[in-house]
Image 1 (cartoon, rainbow, N blue to C red):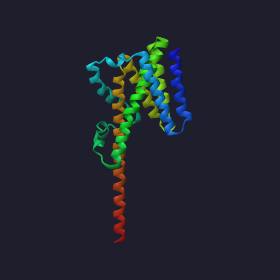
Image 2 (cartoon, rainbow, N blue to C red):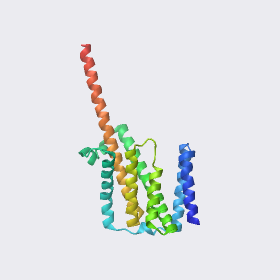
Image 3 (cartoon, helix red, strand yellow):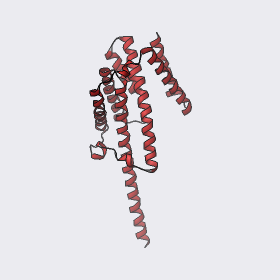
Image 4 (cartoon, one colour):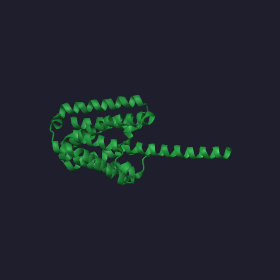
Length: 224
């Protein structure tokens, strides 16, 4: 009964945050309430999952994160070129672009950690306790994570990408049971996506700047 209440509580918070609450500060309050509920779940369910470490799995996590990133590039249709496969030049950016990149990277750490604790650690385990079915828990968790990220602003391929990632990381959690592994994969995968995004932004900015220089030079020639 308590588990059903906790699931309903998180669902109500999400529905209110998604469709009713518009104020950003109030949204943060609701997220805090959701986080508190996750902590409460931890005291009820136990924190043993966090204490089991496997060095081999830890070493596999970065490779798994990179693999999910490559799958994302393939699904979205991004070219497999050096700047996309190794998108780390963004760490050398300066000024406003770097500050935007840094802030989004920090938000990624917080949001990825929260989502893994909510969906993989809480929801997956809660459904497992209710249904005694790992398969049903995996399906509900994957679909729930996907549904939360549905947006009109996203293209169809982006939704397919999110669904694929949701399925893969849920399967990984079902096999390992430790949410820390999934948190690591989620953060690294999203960070790669963020890096690729800012590499593209920098490339487009440079292209616009070069075009502006060409136009300016032509104007100067015409004025002479």
